[in-house]
Length: 169
Image (cartoon, rainbow, N blue to C red; front, side):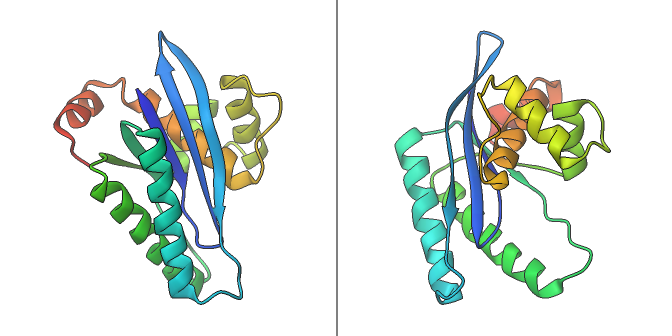
């Protein structure tokens, strides 16, 4: 199983491909889609859509796992991230990928075993689980890999296996 993990944003979209085979995690590729602040926002969305479409076309993952949005303060930022997230979801759906969503709490619990883990703990455990020499940069990339790991662990549950077979999201 190859999972494309996504940490959504509009300035930086972290992505990471993780394979789970023979009971082992293997990072295949990871990176970030970046857009510049001085570029028209609608063009930034198109850049995200196009670049992610290339990642999907090139690596052909089996599914996509994406972080659910959670904002408490800046509504303008939340709306812009939600719009970017929309083009990310569209890109995956057009490619026929099943989409699975996870909260930050689910990611922290899956990767560290502790739902109140701090970001550096999650990043370090992601590095260890994937046997990487260093935590990937930018942080959004490490977050995307953690989201992919979360889905791989959740896919082991009976409910997730059923959803995965049926292609539900």
